Length: 496
Image (cartoon, rainbow, N blue to C red; front, top):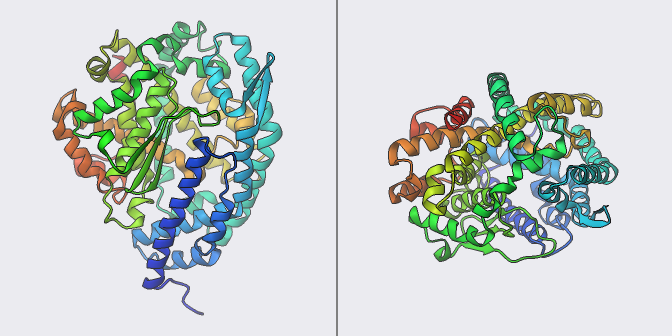
């Protein structure tokens, strides 16, 4: 039998073409989600780089791994690309529909992508319910059939990659899913009383309902926190970010490799995002400033990604610049996002009223989100090993409803699943952020974000890209392992 492994020369060619594929894909995603073009034209890109996403490429790289983590990253990239290529037309159709679908509620026409923000901004509960029902109806009628098509395609293709199912495949990539799931189960058990007490208080204060009375259309209103809007005006968003980065020794406007896209466009995504088109040569931070605490958090989250990719060393291989452990870049994003909830940062940057009260509310929201993602991981492990995904609709409602004490819509059972177990990256990133934040406060003080020495440390760590895993970075800086219990302690400390 011929050796299916890949030669060193072929590996180098694969790396170069993978880098170009990612650059073109990110450029396309940027143009679409920035509202610069209606259609998401990813199929021609897959066609130009079809050699990267063939079954032969995936199996050849898999046969070449032999303990080499860099090649394992390429293998994961090839497998992900192979599965994505098979379902690319479904992805394109979903994104086109999301950009063009509209709902009419109470005589007002609302684009699909604006329904969630509109629900969050709507003070009338009956209207919130009508908006949510319209969203679910569009999803069930137009999007879920396509999601189900894509899921069936991926499910049928996974065994050709040498894995029993999607979960087994990602275990082979090195994701320690079972260990993380055990930590998530412990977090759900240990924080249940804390969650019920803190969320009940917050629901009563913000929405005028108890946790027991709340429904899924009330949660976006809770997180939106409209009563704090005056403290987070849209016109101060970019100056606050610039000032924060300046405190760390970074001049945002002078970074030649960072682009700020702040223009208002009708079809621009309402939420900030980062497009690292060239790493580190061209990183685009996209924002449509609306103001309010959630919008500020989103901006700072994406700024964390932006600075990480912008400071990544250009000398690194593509595996470290574009692949690797995404818990790393999400960890840097959460580090910046959670500055917006920090009393020390609020006092210094915004002369903020009642910062401790706001921080406590932010801790309760963090607990809500983390519990939701813990439940998502447990659900996805079941879903992606099930012989038939359709009956999993009810498990989605049961698992997430038990974690949040609010039933989600069964129509979200597929839309709420990101490829590649990205849920695990977020969970580990929250732990990474909690543990690193504690270290930065101990080493540089509560105002570490205003210390150039802290900025120097961050830039040094950012330069490593995603070569080291989040676990390795944390161990190197703090000598500790990633542990979800750190998130629990962060919440308890803030609520105290």
